[in-house]
Length: 239
Image 1 (cartoon, helix red, strand yellow):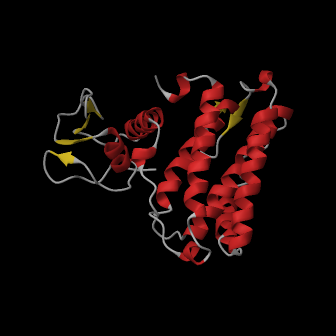
Image 2: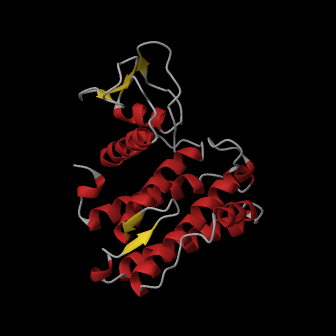
């Protein structure tokens, strides 16, 4: 069973658990620690915190769209999104923490108050996909769980619920397939059947290991705990 097969209440609970996981690791960082690097090249923890805060605000706009029927995009443009993060990173540590707390609370309030009839309303993501607004639960789940690891102060893919790991891997493989990437690549999760990323291409490379380790690698966050048929390759593309 994947994330999208769960009841909406369960999906929202997992998103909230991820938010709490991110908040826990954020709370363990001092204000000066926010100047440190993350696992994302070129981003400090300040950039990452601004991004996670403004992402919640952007999802609030999609929930407003669903509630009112008035088109409200996540961002006015990709440039606006990037500018928002860059400017947010210059805020004081206290202001950044307040941004996170405030936008998290606002998103949770909108989730709680959205009428049941509006959850199937179609909205458009920043990538241009048309999805039901219930997809915001998965969009936020991905953000908070993965970026808790990106804070680089102890977050682990091994802490994620299995349903999140399995759905992340499905998402990533789907992205590779749409982009025609990963020819010859076989993924073998312990206890499962090996999966060919591009089924019609002859096998050339195999990456294997526990589910959390395979997802960590596929998401571009390292190779800890993996085995491979040769040298562990770079993932074809990552989140």
